[in-house]
Length: 290
Image: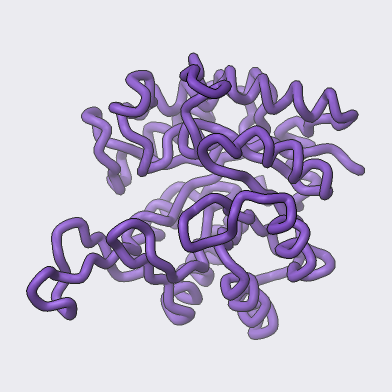
């Protein structure tokens, strides 16, 4: 096996301050969490942004400040910006055709404005259409294509977020149609209700569906975060951890920081006989355009 790329997802948009009072929220906090995690062994930082009060944000200036702080730090982290916000539809209580409170659904061009402006080396491309809580996540093939074309224009490599088998089939079709380039980078998301369960059997099956030359990673949410680090590595995948996926370091104990979670994931990989990639080694593995 080659070296393993460890991604840290430092804040996400679903984790709340009520779940962890140390959740990074301001651009400075998010950037510092990513930089500290790089020193602990992470090669890639997956970035969402928030308002100071913890509410999810899509503000370009929030993304810009985080990206500038990481780049100016000299740590060399590979930056991976989300394009997930803007995909949720909540049916209205009286008329399900009309959006209800909590709907964020918007034009795909709006969801990639920060990608075109900041040109990260990686950005996520969600391929799922599924229920998430009381909202429906919608990523139509047409909208995904528009976003993928914008990513290509920005020179950013899409990280294909797949939550179930149909998402992988959509990815294969987009590759066949020339929308996505090979080798593609897949991120298998497990533990989301109504999606892939967080089990070893799931990963074995999902891996069997991927294109033969694909790069891939996988992660689990909540209590399965660290078990899935071990399972993913064993199957030859890259790995991920961070406060977006879970806030504990062990059952019943909040993690002190994202960096502490990275240290634990790094220790798991080391104990299994693996070796983490540096940011520049990750770039070489994935063929990124720095």
